[in-house]
Image (cartoon, rainbow, N blue to C red; front, top):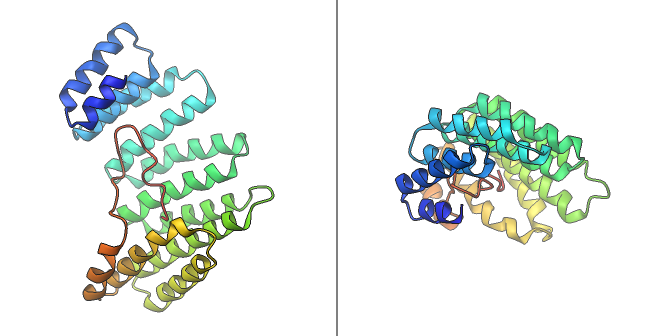
Length: 239
């Protein structure tokens, strides 16, 4: 498995896929090998074939947590193609798993992940619903610390600003930008500061202020791919 991961990270996708398939000849129920093969196929642009492997990984999962991980892998395969509806279908399963173990933070993370795919695909209504669900779920964490509460506030305002900008509502977008800045300025989540220039640039772009967008976006963290080979947490950011 480590060899396959290394090959994929080096861009040697055909070699990695061959290795996973060889592993599956001897161990067809290997969840790791099925997930690995699926991820490589997604990177090769073969999503339909990839999802056969993810489906097998879901089928053979022994534990609820393992099944949720495989369902998330399936969700990310659809996310890689910008399919909001199918991404949400599988993210809902992951969301429900975290509900069953009362992990409210991961519920929020999962909902935000689905929302990010939907906003990028242009389904703003679904994005809004899932961002709100993420915010509300995260805040259910028992005895939530102030920094965690601020994090969910920042993320929710960040999301609402982007959605308003996409809808052409300049005043509303700027109102949410200001609210996001207020949450950030409390200083309890300094690691989120990198996402604020991105927000400014994003809103400026959809307002047609391209000069400001060009000035702000290079200051933000480079946009990460929705789908990577083995670390599928990369859509879990401010959005």
